[in-house]
Amino acid sequence: MKKDHNRSLAALILVREKLALDLCNEIQMRKEEAYEIIDFSLELCDKLPQTYNQLKLEIKSYVIINMLSLVIKFH
Image 1 (cartoon, one colour):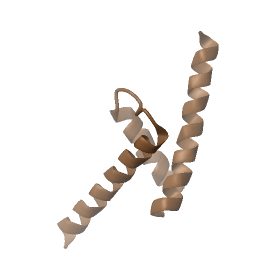
Image 2 (image 1 turned 180 degrees about the vertical axis):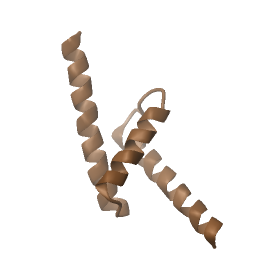
Image 3 (image 1 turned 90 degrees about the horizontal axis):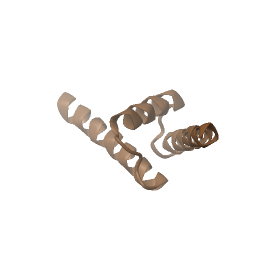
């Protein structure tokens, strides 16, 4: 049982690292910011999305919506 938990934790850490790297490259954000957004999104969801691409798309959508709302607010 503990071995399965350790594997799940290791997989989640690897996904977090890969996701942070992809977000840094795709939307030009700092790695620290990417970690904060990823951690925040993982805390909000009850269960993990089915695929890596789905998780990445949800986070990118969240970032873009927030950026647009800031542009509109200060325009």
